[in-house]
Length: 460
Image (cartoon, rainbow, N blue to C red; front, side):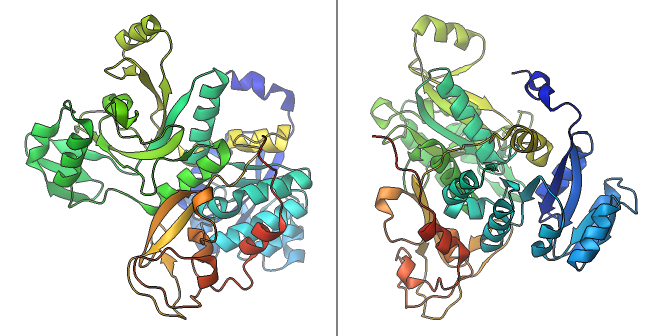
């Protein structure tokens, strides 16, 4: 695809962009790239830490006078009229600034929904980076945007959008997508000389991995042995469930299982691992989303938090030819892995902004339904009145484990990030899946959207 031709019709048009959660890491990556795209203008930045945003702008080389903090609508209008970036603490003041598209990146579920709804209702496009919001009401916000004649989309550079793109590319070409997924956030890097495994800032000794390096004939057993050898390191993360929920709702693929598989495997093994169990792999069903932990040596290239699809092979001669060219084809020759070994965060997002604001087209899915629901299982006994607190880098909910269920199996259960930051109405015993009626959802905008926005009925 020639992207210059794709967007040539935009000419010298310029689109005004607002960004919430502007101090965050995703926003920084976007701000670092957006000035290199002449069709995009940063018009407004919103964050609870405006001084932190000013620091980011200074570090990125923006002129000292580029942005001005505004505490009222009139001040915002005046600053915008003077051609300065409007810096806000209160997202409600975004309404005072003329915008073509808002990038929502606060990471806060209810706030993300409010920012999106307010933008859509004033006919502003929305690029949703807050996956916590998207996992709960993405389909509803998508439908609301359609009703207002604007675009709601995932943002290129984030793993959900990248995977949606890869899945739809594969389907367009006529491939059967057996599985689709991503690598977990950090690789497992094994040093054969020392027996040490490093995962970002964590380290453990796992010398047994040397003898487990090859998959062997019993793939599920070998993966279980690897997982056991790495038991000292985390092998799953709450955000992965959230992102796969977004992908499921956008593509119709279902979760591979309630607790995603997270096999510890090498890139070259993916086509052998993610194939049906009856053929030696780990999948109990096909047409699914899943996540793997990338295992590699220090000198080997990382998967980079990238995305992959497993497709069913056609003509065996063609795929043997592709295997000879270095592509990842299963030992049986019946499955192949096609992958994109990177996600560049906001560096890629300008493509989504130009597509939405300039061409009225989502770069993610423009028709979503609730195909899967990320739910919460209590890991301890809770008492009525307790707050389900969410926090940390991975936005975990204290005392709860995430699961991803097909929508048909989640009737009455509370979506994980709908329950976050809410109080319990009842006692909840350990091991219980949280239900909506257990959580005080009074005043929740996301719950209002789930009840008030009707989704399109699936064909057939």
